[in-house]
Amino acid sequence: MISKFSFLQINYPELFTISELSEKLIHIDPSSSLSKSRLFSEKLAVLIWEFENLGFFEGNQVDRINQLFYKNCIPDVIKDIFHAIRKSGNKASHDGNGSQSEALFILKKCFQLARWFNETYENEYI
Image (cartoon, rainbow, N blue to C red; front, side):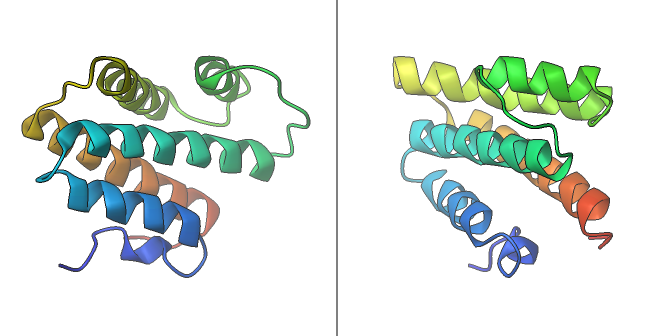
């Protein structure tokens, strides 16, 4: 299976590896897929923070997402995607429960996030 996230492979190999694993885990362990999707979104938020030269950050993922939004680095729709991924990943990590349909839905959100990121910071349209 060729990963839908292959466009990240050259410039962002860590993001690619995490997203590819999340894709593979959907059918094996949806909760792990959701956790990997959350990790993907965390790494992506850190990259955006760095690209925007926002300096030192102390806080959690909620704080980072909200600060990126308040500093006009991400639009409202991207903020909402980040929060959806975060919440599902948290629930899956803590409860160990996650359905295949939820994991697929969140993976699609990760793809939207990755596509937005690539178009915004690499000027490459998917």
